[in-house]
Length: 277
Length: 294
Image 1 (tube, rainbow over the protein chains, first blue to last red):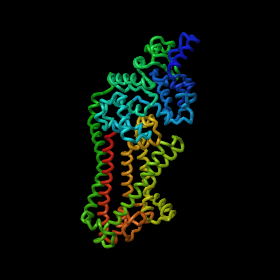
Image 2 (image 1 turned 120 degrees about the vertical axis):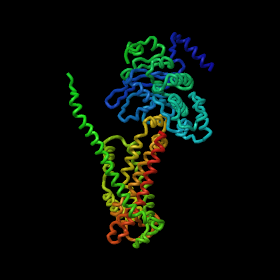
Image 3 (image 1 turned 60 degrees about the vertical axis):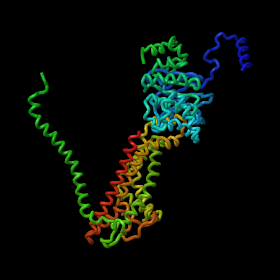
Image 4 (image 1 turned 180 degrees about the vertical axis):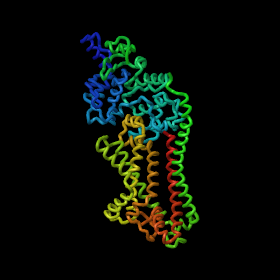
């Protein structure tokens, strides 16, 4: 540590950069999107997207309905491929490897990149089996290990205390908010690097929403989080950076406080002040 | 100026209400007609046959003497036949449904296969009998044994199972598949752990209904030449056999020669109806039991 630090200092002295770019700082890039284009049939849904997403940050993606924000987040774990008519060009580097490359195994990618969906979607199984699903898929059979993973994941998603006495009950008995936190626990159980959240609170009541938001703050210490949201206040409250999408393009991408206090683009300002969208 | 003339409305009210009642009466009679025929049928077979049903009738082998004739051979034959039909239709039917729903690319080929399966479901069973005769009995030289009959019957009900299984698989919500894929599961893991468990009740219901159709089918097995002669009780799927509906068919044919054969046929119909009723009850039970879970 020490020599590296000294070296850094030296460099700074020599270059005397007054504005060492804060965002680039020491954080590593997780996702680097380069010239991404996506079509649904003839519909050009994403246009020349260039975005860099950093480690241990919450990146919010906002924009009106149909702007491509959900499509974009679904390309990050290639979920978008479930739709047969999709064509993609460009590059998405995840940890410096292009995930759009044919040789990149999608199962491998989705093990490192967990996803939480718009509507809570637990399996019609017990709470325990829901969380153990991912680890079992990846070959963990040992009961004790599974028990530990389930407990750790449920604690990580701040739902352990509510369900610890009813792990063998069906997950459909939980409330909507609890189901969504269970789905977050389920995503944590595969020990991902990144968690994608596609409007995770849009089907929840305000109190459940608050709990999920608090959870996101907690989770970003360990994971990188990308969250699509319709709710601009939510983006302002929980994210470090915000990307504003409009008609398949990134209009503006910057620190969240800048986007919400001093946007560079007129369209961003119009959107966040509620003039359209 | 009003468009609705109150006097006219009053005048027509009577005939409107009358037609309303007539419509209801017509639909009720249409329903009652089917029910009535069924009641007559059940009444007649029970009247003719019930007295003949006893332990000996069920336990005895076939005989030319009506007093000693029994249906053990047909019962065993039906059981062995089902032991061939059930696994073959389930494996092929569910397999086809999974392929069409989960793997096949939606396109012309898939549409062609789909249309053909629907058409196959409408092909008369006699034609399947000819198919079985050509391919299994003669082509593969199996002879008219349980295996040949079972494969023929399996082909006959296969389209029904495929369509039922497809519908059950299609009814599994997409968000459950997404959840599984989202955690890095392969397609097969998703099918095995999520899609099949969720669609199993529907698949089972469809399969049991298809099997109960197979149990009642006569024509294909008559075509492949099930012996009407006295044969030993079948011991396995490589033996010659007869089944309940075929037994009914032959007894009815010969009832001009021996009057009591009418009663034997009626008694066998009662047994067959009871078996069908039980199978359909199981299907309904499974459907209700699992429906609440999702």
